[in-house]
Length: 286
Ligand code: SAM
Image (cartoon, rainbow, N blue to C red):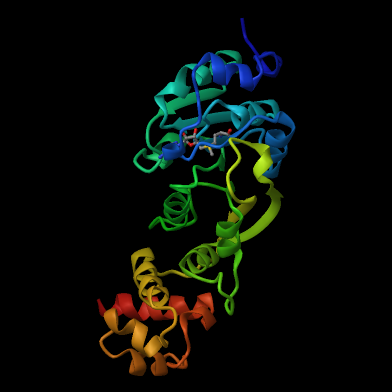
């Protein structure tokens, strides 16, 4: 018998699933679950068009957001979960999803996500990310060699402070490596905040849903060059660029002057486009 969204709707409440499958939250896995289906459906809708799309979900846990994605009409969902305890609960959802859900047990940092996503449908990544691997995952999504990316959008839950770093513009304390890497290849926006009380267990801080869309016209530069330059510049963010870039450029002051960039500036004042020009120079030299 084919089972559609009605069957997903008929699944037992998440609270019951958590107790039935022994899914007490583990801090080491960054587990803060969302049990309110109204909220998870709102997050799913923030992911943009879902029908006809392949949604990649990282860390489905007991499956609150997974259910919401299916109920909101996702064409197909692939969910990657590291916690083996959650797999039987997720298989229960898969059984009700009429062939629209595949569960992959594994570490999202090690799994070849692009290969899993390979197919005819456009891919969107939607996730309530485990806070301990959220930044490395985002960095990977925005720094592949090939661009445009294999995904069409990222709709992700972060700690609010990380969200502010992603969308930051030059000139403030939030502007850093993540702002430059994301600003290089994406447009990014904080869509809405989610208070600690919405999670089980509640985290200490407010979270935010952030949406990133790839820029088709992102400047061409080797991602590792931009990563090296931003690491050096923001690694010593109180120093002037002529000093902080010494570890990556033999004569930073002359190089910056050649590019028309004031060597006495600090990293936090430098626009993304200037970081790109320095990285282009660096990769030409290395
Ligand atoms: N999506 C669920 C929700 O919204 O209720 C759970 C979100 S919880 C913040 C993060 C989830 O990511 C947990 O289920 C955790 O086990 C999983 N996780 C942690 N590290 C992971 C990794 N490296 N790869 C895949 N999943 C991971």
